[in-house]
Image (cartoon, rainbow, N blue to C red; front, side, top):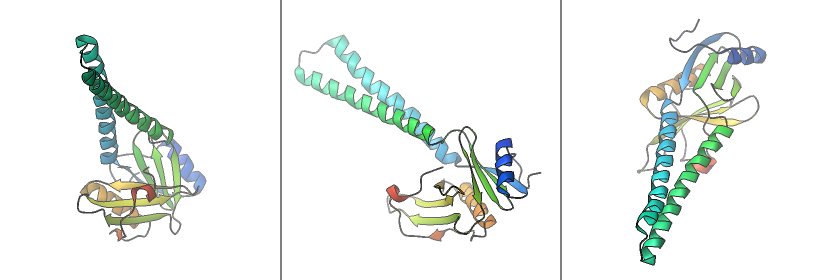
Length: 201
């Protein structure tokens, strides 16, 4: 039985934990709520805005047929902009789908490690080895919020990150860090360029 109320372990995660010898299951928690919500909202807004801008410009030209070539150029440019916005968000959704960022992110915590599972994507085992987890934080600058992330390296050597967007999420990452023997407070590091950060899980 879980030592925390809420989610239960899935059959797939249980099988992977058993195969990896992670020992007794302790609890399961949901992670990345805010990040997943922000991403979904951004994709929906981007697609809607792209459709509106692109189709409105075309409908304007079709309905009014302006005589001025300048108006035509502006309207076609707006249509191209709308199409670019639409394509960008569609491609981003496809990229995330191919990367396995589908469904809810669950952390199934065991005595000897954890299984990170996307309910509609992949699951990965994280054994309690030295260096498998790093709890870090940095100041991203005056125009951005402070960043707190849990960097995770799985048994397959792939690295990923989970980011906290709220105090409850910070506490969840601290709980995972403490389970792996890390300090509950993140280690302060220099600002990390987004291109060099581990990809979000």
